[in-house]
Image (cartoon, rainbow, N blue to C red; front, side, top):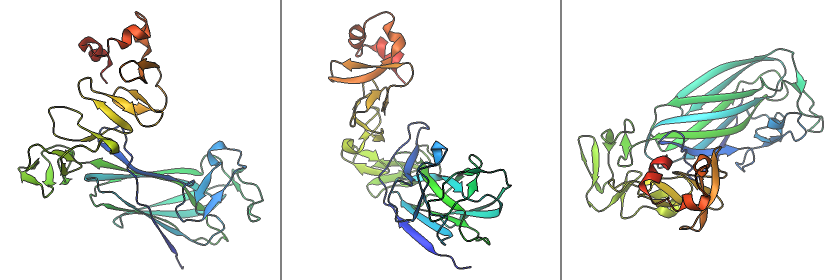
Length: 321
């Protein structure tokens, strides 16, 4: 069986998750992005979740895809999430996912004849009937690996059919990061460093900048935090730069973001597109911009009265996330 490799080099912008502490999104890609891979489209699908593009096509003869990513953020664990769409109404098939060429996972897929049409016949004369929900597969794998290169290889075992069965809807890469002071580590604590930058001293699993006035930012000693890139000194007692997604200005005293990128709104220590349930956008007279505040705070006062209390300690206790 001949296999053809497509190498897709994607030098990522860094995205981060505020949901799990220092667990960060490194990259998220979907079929709408130009990755140099042939795509399959089902705009007339009965199911909304299939009305988009996918990497790969049932009409091509390529059975292996390699997606390459790169990150310079020190980390000790990776997590790969892949959404597959399986385009075959019957038969067995074997899918192999290889992560960094080391961790290999194989699993079998079988579908009986309980089917429902997904795509119409205008796509290259292809008209097949497929299941609606069972054919959407989600793959998730965590593994210990600290290298900067991340390779995701997906292989479908060739069957006796005239078209392939697997396409990829999206890939998401997460990393579990080291402490900001570490260049490499065993876990996320400050005393679990295994190496430091050249501008830092290493002792008993800890790193310290040789210049005491410098800050740690992703394992490197820097003079100031890169605010434009979302890094801020979050706590005054710590000489570290913490990444706060989409936050342009951080209030150390009140421990909250006060200015977000674009039209996003500050909500405690994060930025959101829309205020969460139980929050309401209110104009902050100091920053001249809106932020999300808890709606139950309005029961005993007007928005103006409540905003005036932002700088008070009692108000901070209620609103600190």
